Length: 230
Figure 1 (cartoon, helix red, strand yellow):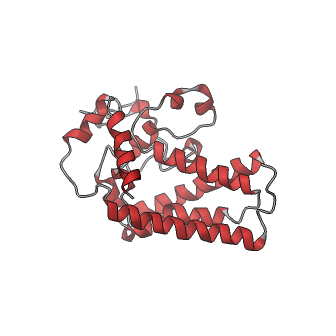
Figure 2: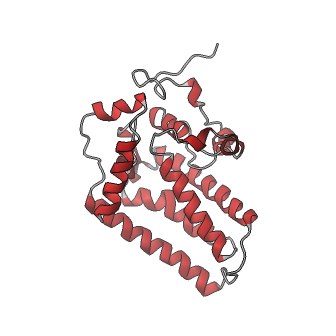
């Protein structure tokens, strides 16, 4: 289990070129770095939950079609999954959802890909696995579901790396209103904003979106205040 651990830390090391990532180097140890034990436990939970989703599909033959793929169903699953994620994420920030211990995750205002993987088991199940199980009820082909799992998991992880990936500034990425590392960095500076992991429009719909361009601390790590509107 050390291969993904060191691989993630290598990614963090290679992407520390942005000035605002110096906060990572200056921070004091907070005992929330990803360790080998948590990786093993997370892997077990992921395996059991995903296996249950596959069992549901196989038993009820909702993935009987192995020869086609529907981009409409794939996009629908992405949108519904992120919508559920926003609701669950907001609940974890409420006084009723604090027993999931999500606030400890926010001790790190500028997370790395490795340290951001810290979460309690209850938080992990609520934030990801409940959504995966519910989305499993949406019919579709085998490849629809595979594409959904791969793309959604990739975006969720990379937007938490706090690295400005080149594709996040392309017109296509912005056309689909996908969340980038800058949008999610705002959430760690202002936890009542930018709850979405995949699509910006969910935060815009709920009135929680804060544009990274209006926040100091994204490009200027010495200051974390909101610009006043002119």
